[in-house]
Image (cartoon, rainbow, N blue to C red):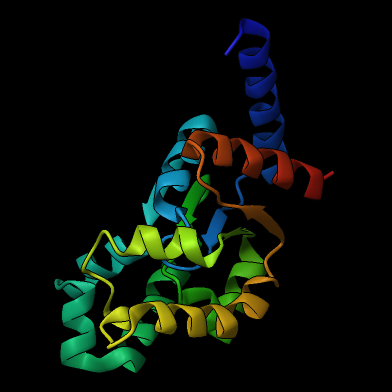
Length: 191
């Protein structure tokens, strides 16, 4: 990156910081879309705190998400997720990565829309499946055919994710490039 590119990026980041005026930036999308990785890079570029709602839920529950699903079920997990996200949205200057199902909940989605700027990191099935196949901590994919399950989740969730303020394509490039795309897209939205 040249010096002028670096200055341009930092100028865009500064402009975005001003336009957000403390409002949280919330990343939504499917598991494997890169919300945590992109979120960390975005927070660094915008000089903001980064939090992952799944990590915060695990701290609050003092158990892992797979344990919560196994012991309490998905409805109880979703209720706890909504409480945690509600609390986190009160923080200023935050980049928040949410779990794949968070924005699907109408109440959580309404809170995000009212208190933050939402960004859908949209990825195609091949990228998502390749990424989620690397880890075994995805309770919703503990099925006989995880790819088919992921396809069904995409079919159900993409129309809801499309309600986010901004959509950015998560693709197979360095995640810092996707973070730059998020800055550009949110700036364009907040003109």
